[in-house]
Image 1: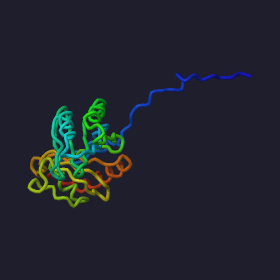
Image 2 (image 1 turned 135 degrees about the horizontal axis):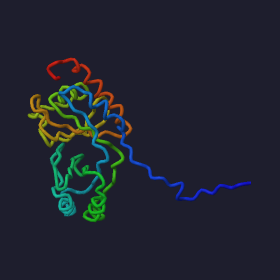
Image 3 (image 1 turned 45 degrees about the vertical axis):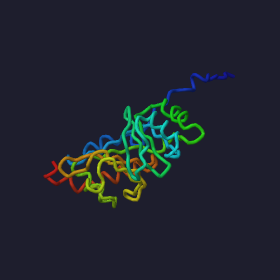
Amino acid sequence: MTVEITTQSQKSKPIGRTSPLQGYAGRLAELPQGVTVREVPFLTQLDVRVDPAGPEAAEAARVLGVALPTTANTAVSGADGVEVLWLGPDEWLVVAPPDQAALEPALREALGSAGVVVDVSAHRTTIAVSGPLTRDVLARGCSLDLDPRVSPAGTCVQTLLALTGVVLVVRDDVTRDGGGEVRLLVRSSFARYLADWLLDACREYEDDSSWQ
């Protein structure tokens, strides 16, 4: 009898990271000219809880390069591509470029026992929507008024889009002439549903020559 022995090194094969919307790039690239939809995968996302009036919040600001926003439904930009999104009176979502491994321990050290930092990077992916049609498309499934007079750049809202919970961030004023960009942070398990909804919501503009 021959016994085949498999070593641990033979078993362990590197597994590549797969984004929730892998395979959607081609379909999203075929949308009308008036709107662009793309996934921004693998962003670092850290949920932070701390007293905004305490000294630890100031230490967190030092790490992030910007003070934690205390105005409801706002987002601010810090150093090295970091964004801080207001989620509640003592809760924020820190969003940074992928593989920012040093950010979490730095925040933990800054907050000490007075705060909490949880890595939620795998919890959501990000869908960016931009172009002059952005407001029209999103209005089909979201009651939020994206007119810059109501929701200017820096607006951050937890809302529903097509009955899906999202964190909606207005990164640039969304106008019908210049466009602007909105980012949708959506649970990974709902990302394909939301992408399919966006594709369907754009269909009525395919034959509209004004957007070709």
